[in-house]
Image 1 (cartoon, rainbow, N blue to C red):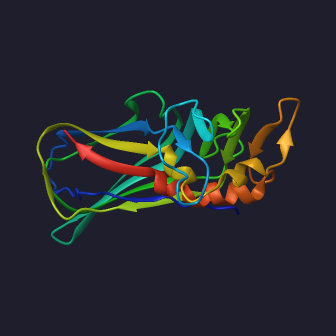
Image 2: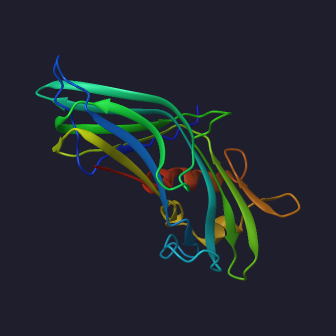
Image 3: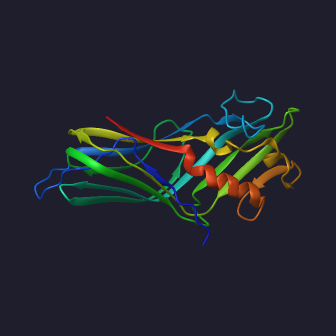
Amino acid sequence: MKQITVIVLLAATICAACTKNSINDVSLNYSFNLLNPSAVLSTEATSGSPVTAGTNGSINWTGAVVNISQADFSASHAGTTTALTSTNLYSINPFKPDSLSGTVAIPSGVYENLRFKITMNESAVNPPAILSGTYIESSGTRIPVTVTLNSVISFVKEAQRIEVTSGKYIAKVTIELNALVKGLTAADFGQTTRTGPNNAIVVNYNTNRALYEKLKARFANTVSIKVSK
């Protein structure tokens, strides 16, 4: 099976102190956001720098769909591990500010060694990520681009200690699309097989495979997570 695994480790850890009498008085929502949809595409040293949309020699993403098969929160307290899971968070549009895709209820308290994991499974119906946009050559020629990442992805991010009080918190997942092309060159997009009357660049497991593998390898680096009230 083709597999991408995206494991996100939080910059600050959350772990709940759970007891038999714990009250789930904290609402934790997932919020998806997107930054830097337009980036320079030239040399390995400069590609990935954010630019104004429509700049010659750039890649401009204008549409995205993210499908998460499972989101797992795990944390430890006094030797006890607690796990929370949400499944089938589909059709997330990170271009829509603060797009909420789910909520979990947890007890307030001190959280340590929290692990937030996102799993995105290969699927013919709900592939992990579909991106659409335009590659603008240095000459100004505009070429449509569609990328379908259909493999399994997994991220992780950690923190040491944070105290959560009752109320509403947001785990903000930010996708910085400029990181998707860092280290690539204009040739990676320019020397691709073109499709249809508009010479579109279609990138998937079977078409323009070399570019697909490079984008797939960079996808995890586009994602960061921050929890705030």
